[in-house]
Amino acid sequence: MADFFVYISLFLIWTMLFYHMFLMQGGYWYSMHYRKKERELERLKTPMPRVSILIPAHNEEVVIGDTLEAMSNLNYPSERLEVIVINDNSNDLTGEIAEKYAQKYTFIKVIHTKPPNGGKGKSGALNNGLRMSTGDIICVYDADNCPEPDAIYWLALALVNDRKAGAIVGKFRVVNANKNLLTRLINVETLTFQWLAQAGRWFWFKMATIPGTNFAIRRSILEELGGWDEKALSEDTELSFRVYNLGYYIRFFPSAVTWEQEPESIKVWWRQRTRWARGNIYVIVKFILGFHKLKSRRIGIDLLYFLFTYLLFFGGVLISHAIFIINLFIDLNLSIGLVSYLLLIIGFLLFVTEGILSISMEKGQLTKKNFLAIIFMYFSYSQMWLFLVIYASFLEIKRVLFRQEVKWYKTKRFEQTAIPKDKTA
Image 1: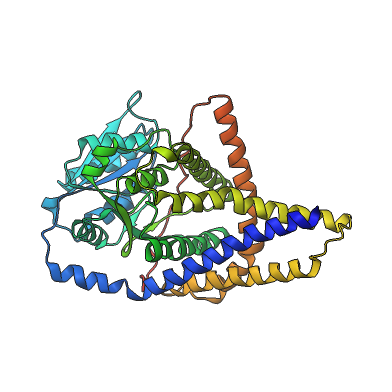
Image 2: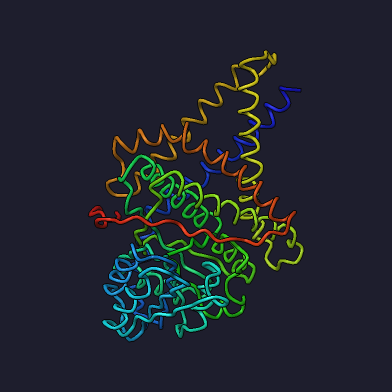
């Protein structure tokens, strides 16, 4: 019986490893050629569309000034641009700081919301901002983001010249990557996600996931969909599936770059990632139950990926860990014994290889410290995700059983010095 569970766990783990190898290959090829798209777009000399940038902000006094400073330096015609800060029920200086920028720049506007219309979380704030916006293209940035000057230019240009694209997704870099060991690990995770999951899925399947920041979407699509789902903790993933269902694809275009802040403490990281995991579990359940009603069956590709990640793969890892620990105290007489250890070692080497490839695609990231971080990441950070997903699943089951209201957790911000000088390659 123990052998059976070992085989099951190895099958699940290696299925995911092979899929990630497949995605990484596509991501690497895409990283070598996406610059050609820049030259193609610039040759078209397309008139720039009117863009509305929505910035939901709840108690963001630590970072909102830097974000709006970055918005004031965008290389985009100011007469075709509006930046809307949704000061969502803040009780700090967020509103005052935003108003100072609004007085200085005519394209910056501030909306102040209070309950019952405000204070409901990011999705609610975005819906309030959408109603007040005028742009044909809607861009979203978190309040801790500092987009590079050409970010909006590339997002808008790519979207207006691609009728099949419902949204364009840019790349984000970690502004505090070298703050401590945790932020260094998150930086590796971020780069791997973008070049493996985003670039790889785009290369092979013409699919990507809308992140919470640095993306552009057609206003007409948001209006057709009725805006953001205010019950979704991961409003970005949920919106992605609905965009797919309309028959559009989502393009990953790494020319548009923003710098964002990541958690600097385990407590903040745990709460943020728990919200992400709960949000993705909500999306999985929502679209599996309604799969028969979907117009686009291509959603099944991404739905299977999320299902495999949050249920099957983590289940396989959990079984593998359990058998390993039990076997330390009780001899289970495993016939696969040495072979399973060999496969685990190979899996570890593949994990390290994927991490190295990911950081090698970014200027200045292939360093000795990051290499050692990848090795350490396998035995620490990646294992923390296992417990986090279990915890998030428990909270979601509890919420459904007891019909609890979804509560939004806003990630704590930290003061930063400056954006790193190593720009993207």
